Length: 154
Image 1 (cartoon, rainbow, N blue to C red):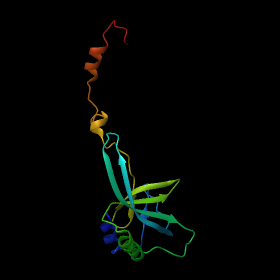
Image 2 (tube, rainbow, N blue to C red):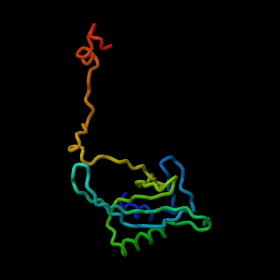
Image 3 (cartoon, rainbow, N blue to C red):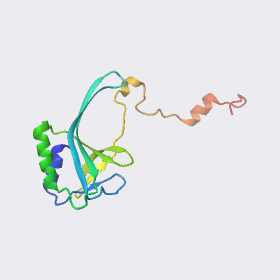
């Protein structure tokens, strides 16, 4: 989700709910402790220099059960971040403390924000020699070509 989409959704909500990929909910007493811009400047395995920018929300569970973060408060935090940090309308990445700090994508299902799993991928497949598709081989042709009766291959 982009920042503008999050703000639009927040304007329609009365309560904030975040759901983990396993279906569990982030405890209701969470706080958004950070909003920031993360810039990644790197070189891929094919030698191409790349830049990626995302907006990061960090969710944290506190022992403060009396205060809940409401949508209108999060909108104010986002707007302050936009002004002070000069945030663009970028994709959101969410940090959350599970067994270790985990990073998630963000989606919305109509009632809750969904923390979605992220995956690594090779950005230079054309330079790595990794085939885009696994070649299909007919086993009958493979056996006929490589294993003949009396050849001691079986």
